[in-house]
Each structure stands twice: as C-alpha cells, then as structure tokens.
Picture 1 (cartoon, each protein chain N blue to C red):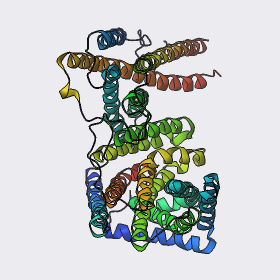
Picture 2 (cartoon, rainbow over the protein chains, first blue to last red):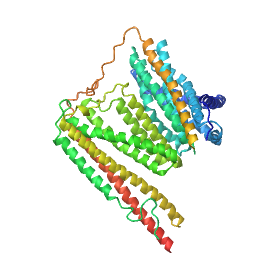
Picture 3 (cartoon, rainbow over the protein chains, first blue to last red):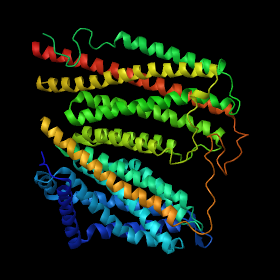
Length: 234
Length: 237
Length: 113
C-alpha cells in the first residue's frame, strides 16, 4: 500500500519519475532518435504512396500526420516500459514509497515529452512533403491540436503499456489494444487538422473538435488514475 | 464416494436447467413472431419505405449492447477489487454479448444507411462510439486468449476503458453533429410501436437466455479446469 | 481496511479535481480560439443538423438501391448471428459437461483401485 500524499506531493513524485526517464534518455537518446526517424520514414512512405501527377495530394495530409504520430508513438511506448523491465527496474519502482498514481503520471509525462520531440520532426516533414501553407494563427492552433491529441495518446498509451507489462506477446498486443481505444483521438485529430490545412478554415468547427479532444483527455486521465492502481497491484 | 464436480451439484448438476431451455425456446418463438409482425403487420413507413423495417431489430440490438456495458463494467470493477473468478466470468460474458449484439447493430445499420444515406458508413458520433467499443472488446478477447497469466486483470481493465470510451463519445454526441437519426420511438405509429415493443421484449428474453447460458459455460470451464488439476493430482495424465 | 478505502476515495476525488482543473482550461482555451482567432472573411455558418435521414453529400443516387435485398440481408444476419451464438454455447456446454463427467468417472476409478 502506498503512503498517502497530498496532490502536490504526488505531482512532485511524478516529476521525479519523469526526470529520471529524461535523464536516461539524454544519455542514450535511443527512444527519441528511433521514434523520430521512424515517424519521418512513415511520412516519406505515405508521401510517395499518394504522389500523383507531379504533386502529392495534400488533402490526405492530416490523416498521414496522425497515422505517423500513432505509429511512432507505439514504438516509443513499447520501449519506455521495456526499459523498466530490463533488470526488473519496475519492481524496484513499485516497491519504492511512491504512490502509484505518481508512477503513472510521471511515465505519461515522459511519453508526452518524447512524443512532442518526435512531432517536432514529423509535423514539419508532413508540411514539407505535402506542400502546405502555415501562418502564425494556424501554427498556434496546430500546436494546440497536436498537444491535446498527443496528451490523449500519452494518457491512454501509458496506461495500456503499463497494463501489458507482464503479458506474454505484449508487443503485438499493445498495437491491437491501443488503436481501438485511441481511435477517437485519431478521428478528432484528423478532422481538426483537416480543417486547418484548408485554404479557409472553419474556425467554429475547429473549436468544437478541440473541445472534444480536451474532454477526451480529461475523461481518460481520470479513468486511468482510477484503474492504474488495481491493475499494477500484483 | 464419487468425485466432487466442483461448482455443480452432484445430482443432475451437468444437465442444462429446464428453465434455461424453456426461456430459450420462448425467446426464439417470440423472436420469430416479431419478425413475422415486422413484415406482415407493421405498416410500411412513409418517408423511408421498406428499408425502415430494419429499425425494429436494429434498435433492440443496440439496447442489448448498451445493457452489456454496465454488466461488464460491474464485473470488471468487482474482479479488480476482489479477484474472484465469478466476476471475471460475468465480465467475459458481458464482453462477448456486447460483441455479438454490437456486430449485429453495425451490420444492420450500414445496410439501412446504404439506402437512406447513400453510403454504408459515416464517421458519426454514435457509429464511431459503437465501433470503438466493439473493437476494444474484441481486443479484450484477444488479450484474454494470448496474454498469459495476467490476462484476466488486463481484460478487466480494458473492458472498463471500453465503457469509458463509449461514455465519452456518448457525451460528445451533442457536440459532434451526427448523421444518425435521433430517438424516434415516441414518434412511431401505434402498430409500429406494438411491433417495436414486442421485438424489444423478445430481445430481452433472448439476451437473458444467452447471458445465462454463457455464464453457465464459464462456470463449466472453471469447474473443468479444477477437475483437470484434480485428475493430475490423482495420477492421471 | 475502511480507512484505507477512505484514503483512496479522497485521493481519487483530489485527482478528479485535478483532471477537471486541467481539462477546463483546455476547453476554455479551445473555445477562446474560435472567438479571438475568427478570420475577417466571415466563415459560412455550418448547416443546420439534419434530422438523420438525408443523403450524405456526394453519395451516389439511392433510388436504384434495392431495399428488399438490404432488409432481407439484415434479418438473415440477425437470426444467423443470434442462433449461431446460441448453438455455439449449447454445443460447447454439452462438450464440456461430457468431458467433466468422463474425467470425474476416471478419477473415481483411479481412487477405487
């Protein structure tokens, strides 16, 4: 049983976990480099798959963007927990006097940060290969969309990756389990970004999709905090 | 002394309960009657025409899928809290029935949509929520089959998440302007209402028959597993 | 045990608050972008929500679609699905019950000898 801590204390502990992950990552740069390169490759492959009559079809760009993020994210999610399993670090982590929600939040924040770094590569390459325009307002809104979508991805993905930690064939299962649950994020993200790449964005509709993304994040954050603890007890 | 059959009574324990058989037969007959009434009693709808007849079975199927959601949510939460196999079986039965009825909904819906909307599928909130829920539950069954020792816990967590996901999309139905028709039951003609409620009744009976049978099957599986352990202990292979 | 449950409850309530606190600014921010970032050329308002029976834009003509086939296919699927499942369960149960009875009698025989 984890000791009781205040919400602030829980967050501080969560940050310590994130800090540790970031430190490890800064030394090896393994996850971010592999994820980022893979994401870039996915965008590249899609861009020539949709290459017609001397130009790439730009209307599919928003779909490609989110698919690349989802693919690259799966790669990173599997790895960030695989690292904990090597040398049974997860056992040490679970035995330490840190509340379970902190472990979850810390891991999720780490995943979020890694994915944001990767998106700094993926998003510009989508805009490059698909010949899209970007002004200041759109860049801001795009940033918000990607941030909210990635947050939802990290919240759900971290929970599932942690759940599957002890499962057999977990690499295969993660993809099978993650994509159905993340489908709303992908659909909403694609719709929102699709509006953004149009010459005349419909801002009302965009704000609706963004609110839905925010709602998804809030709902799943609460649900994950609820069920993370019993799932990791044994 | 004969060997204890674990979860079943020694006397006639393994026979299917007569009440279950009766319930199944009644449900099947009522289902046939409703189908007959759909085609030969209910009037053809003015706007939609003949294709509207899908509605009489499509909507009850959707309701049965929704019934399964609290069932498996309760089963999963109780399993995570107590780790008793009984609740795991309940959750598994709920998941399976939700997959069954959800699939029926998602096959019949597009067949209607082909005529009404011109396309089989649109990414509407309600369609999406159903699809997402069923896909997650299928993933749940896959996990159960292949995840090894911790499968039950993972499956419980996943089915809770599936319900949360469906709830999320349910809440967002208002925001996410949909193509799916709004609630129509109150606007039906009298004959249509009669047929509709009869089919709702028969679906409920069928649902409970299936649930009972499925729970019994889970119980048999657990008992069989325990008996297999006993047989190994007794020196059988 | 009771106190542990109370502690849990309190912590989850606190997290609920946290999630709401995190979620609402996101919503407010998202709502804000629509008002502040509205472009000068007024975007056309989205069309009124359809009652649910309108043809999807760009869809092929539905006049030619045969409703009879669709309805028959749907009902065939309903019945095949439900009865198929029931039959599957029934057969599985019979199979397992038989296996159990067999196993029990074998165990009995081993015990007797």
